[in-house]
Amino acid sequence: MQIEMTIKGLMVDPITNMPIIILRDKDGHRVLPIWVGVFEANAIALQIENVTTPRPMTHDLLKNVIEDLKGAVEKIVVSDLRENTFYAMIYVAAQEGTVTIDARPSDAIALALRSEAPIFVSDTVAEQAIQLKKPLDQEMDEFKKFLESVKPSDFKGPVH
Image (cartoon, rainbow, N blue to C red; front, side, top):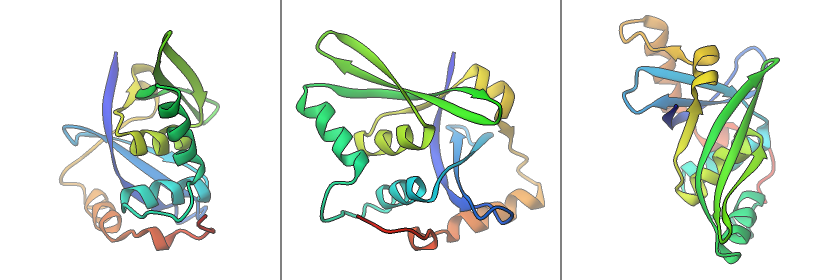
């Protein structure tokens, strides 16, 4: 079984200065933080903010190639967690059937956003990494306030 998730937002880890994608379930009770690279976070932030770049970014290119080959991104699944590294699969509907493609979660999520495809987390990952949300927890309230204030410009890195 898989849990459908949405992107709650992006934040920066105050200790490592690395961006974190925050996924949450539809009920808002469970969250999954995934640490990603600056460039991947930038690609996700641009899409969240509906910023159009003058030339296609890598994830736009991949989406265009899939569509030009008469395919469609069905969904992405954060499928595994090994040695503190997340793994993901992109499910593409192609003429010969569904094709699964191994990907980094950040790339899969960036592609899912551009393709308007759903994001899922496998039960295996959920058991290992999903955190239960505590609505009255002061730390979670501070975290929410921080997420609401994050902007794409908070991430450094060139935009192509």
